Amino acid sequence: MTVAQPPREVFIQGVTLDGRTFRPSDWAERLAGAMSSFRPGGVRGGIGAHIGYSPLCVPTVINGVKCVIVNEELKRLEPMAWDFVMNFARDNNLQVADACLLPDNKPGA
Image 1 (cartoon, one colour):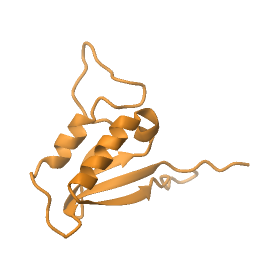
Image 2 (cartoon, one colour):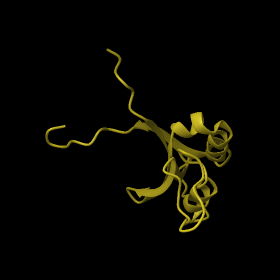
Image 3 (cartoon, rainbow, N blue to C red):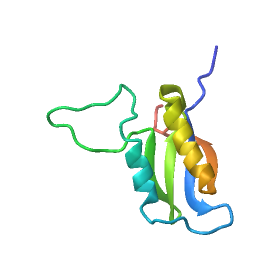
Image 4 (cartoon, rainbow, N blue to C red):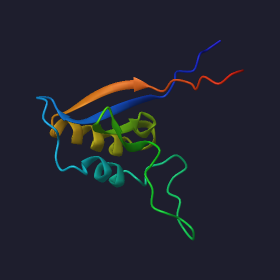
């Protein structure tokens, strides 16, 4: 029996390698906005469509630090988009951490 690996995520943190807060303050929203069209199933548009972040690249705040959570699925879906966000982090000396999604602890699951 093969056990499926949980999805991996990369946390790009709004703190530089030397500990400074990255600016501008809306960098996470800008980066995630640039990645908004990269989503499973492709771009959804048309009547009733709204602007939103891709579930593969989401801005958030963790322990008071702005971050962008990038799902590794982006690498498979669109390698150039993955390279873009990883190069953004590297070029701006941002701290990056790997993690994996843990399953929800639901009773009976």
